[in-house]
Amino acid sequence: MARGSTWPAEPSGHPQGRTRNAAGPGLGFERSERLVMIQIFTEKGRTSEVKQRVFSTIAEHLGKLGVDGADVFVSVMENTFQDWSFGYGRAQFTEGALPVPGR
Image (cartoon, rainbow, N blue to C red; front, side, top):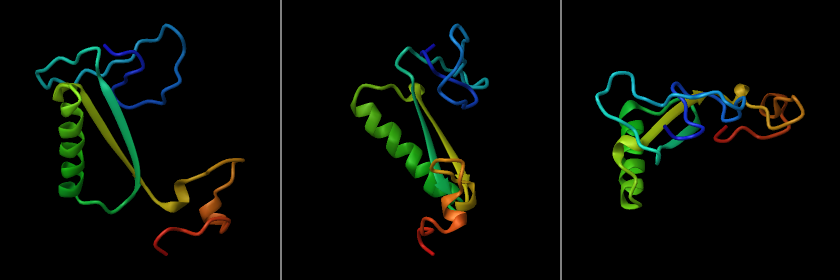
């Protein structure tokens, strides 16, 4: 299993010696040491079809680099502008310190 991998997705910083498991939940394939994990943060509203195209495109491009499809792990985390803090414990979009994209 790849170092730093996780199932389900967890923050990348973890205590030394703790093992993370990126095995699929009974999907019938093995992952190698070349596991690539990608977590995408985006605003709510993408359709399942759009997400599937993103997943397929990522796997296709990584395949050209020699990464097997079984080693491509992608997670999409959807939220809204109120869910972001860019520092100092402040919600800059909510406070108006940053303009909300597309609004």
